[in-house]
Figure 1 (spheres, rainbow over the protein chains, first blue to last red):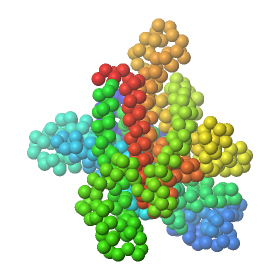
Figure 2 (tube, rainbow over the protein chains, first blue to last red):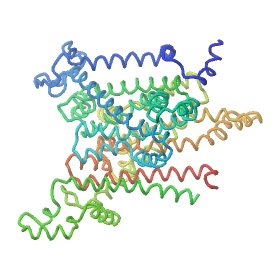
Figure 3 (cartoon, rainbow over the protein chains, first blue to last red):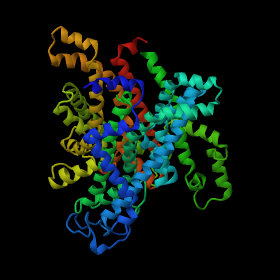
Figure 4 (cartoon, helix red, strand yellow):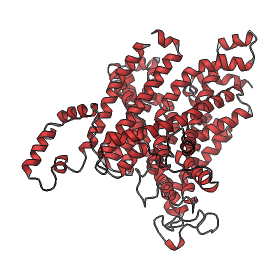
Length: 294
Length: 313
């Protein structure tokens, strides 16, 4: 009982350690389930070339539109071209996760850099943040449409669009946590001992902002996957025959009435992955950074 | 309040500039030379050059950008490469259906989301709260096309209850309403979750405020405390947060329109991009961005209206 009462006070003094975060996550059944599921998904995506039963591009029209759960050889059935859906799902998850990860990393690094520079060098703060406000004024889907219109549909324009849309969000998050850290005594101390700006940022400012950035990124990852899949579904992302979850769903849409599983299985996979990320992100936020909760 | 709106309008100027720049760049990548197209295949190089001078195509890019802004401000967005119709004309036809869809979505999603969030906040930690929150986290996570596919397959195809392609006619006709239901349910379905989540947190914060304790202390009934004192004050941040979700809604509208062959701006944009019809694509993207700006502005004005503190400033 005392531990429960003491917890908020302790949290106010310092962020919980890594081990206690894992322990608290493990106590939340939904978060635990989400973590296990995501670990399995990531593992399956990584191992796709070894565990996929068939070549994801091998077509056999004579075996087209087999329903799922009937034939052990084609567990999720086949699509209209007779390709094995399970194999395509494994490769598709791999590509979808990679798309999200690359976009989040690109946007995250750039956004964090902008946010920290804005917090550290207050002279450029106003200008940088106004630019971020302008970027924030465009929804991600519009970036996607505009970039795909300029370059033509494809996976890279989608990734660039998602990264650009992520920059201002992470700039804001990292700036606000960097501003708090700038007030701390150890920053003054670092200046007093004569450390150069780069060293202060790299050793003291950045590491202390990472927990907010990490929590926000987890929450954002689900959104990125969702927007990326929607753009692919519209035909603006990865082009067929590439196995990507949104593209697979779009392909199945034409056969919705004869073989609904072709579209619903990849869609359900996206749903489950995003749901798991959101559940995990919510739990992480409550533990690491309750202030982010709005 | 007037000053507040003027300030917001001034803030929109750089955004507007960005939108126009993107539109302009889009037209720069057109693989065909507009002067050659206008002159026709038989024209001599002299004529092509003359037309190019006429259109200002031999001027530096920044000057062309100025000309472009002038044309757009006059409502001239060029002509479609495919249909040869004016882009402004094509856009004019699609704007109405998109607005119809957005209103039909918001009209049920916002009240339901706010009601769900409030109930969850009042019954915090109880089973009802858990169920509502599970629903809303699912709503935040579901791809809009998945919801659309399920509704098309089950309600449209299996049960044959409602049509799922195109617009049935004017909104006041029975057929018009029937065609609108499934798209509006699809788009609203992914919007209820975020609203419920935001409402719950905001109402929870307000329920802890001193004036709510005062309202309880003077013996008001619980529903009256919640609706008159808590929810009313929570509405201000909720409106702001809903405003922040407008981009999300617009993205959903693009997908929903494409799925249900709803003749709106989003479907026009996607079609134009896929068929490389650059003038239509730039026009549709400009209109979508403008719509986004205007909705945000409207939210800000509504915010000033709800919060007297902003009005006085």
